[in-house]
Length: 352
Image 1 (cartoon, rainbow, N blue to C red):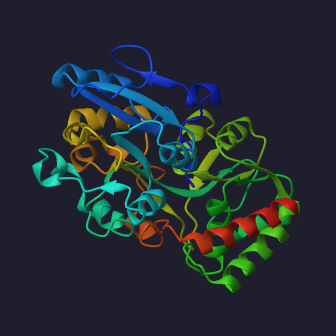
Image 2: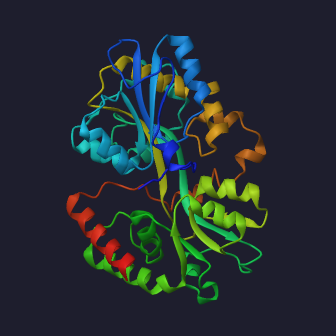
């Protein structure tokens, strides 16, 4: 579901980046850690600091989508020790027996994590046993205030004919369906056939108004003024707003998705102690602060949040009000039957 949050050329995203010695992925040394993460989703200096402080060599690879990660992981070609991926994919791997429990009691900095976000994570990891949150955010509407005169409060505006050919939708199945589902008052995790088909009908009615279905490109299109409205990830909205003062962002009143990207230790892990050391290191305040400054998504690290200036704390694109979060849901893995139905409805929509 979650595409890479920071847009990079595809060739770079698919490149294996290694710190320490060059060459291919090798797991022979006990002082090795093989990490698989979204593209450009960590300050590489923090990895260098980890290597220097622990003597553990990090071998680092990047991917584009959770589905890409899953395919490569399941191929068994590389014994990954640590993976950062999204909520629903973690739940899928847990159900398949592909996740190892994490000994958070042994971690020095685990207490830096805000219990609020750990509670959200229990929706896909019931005992907080398999996943440690790294970043979080929302899905909402980025809009150009010079092109949209009224206040944007509801998903309904995405069906307003005034903005024909000025609307960008997410080219992502779950993110596209969440819009009509939440507008209709349904759960974004529904598996009810009638609710999903009702949502599909609304998407088909909307399609003639849609300029394009995009992902990372949405940010650049909004910066350039190519569209009036875009369904977008909060972090991309933040980046766009920094480049174009006419832009604003809102999580509609009906609610939306709150997503979590977490560290998990896969069953392929051969260096579990090293993996746990790395997770703990990422939770250390100075390290988590460096990654926050680099990625600029919501941090679940309370120690980092408390150290931020008031302007940053008040940034509603990064840290929305509690009232908004209460209306948001975390994506859950819906099972193969529901996945098949979603895929069918999505293909029908794209072909419509």
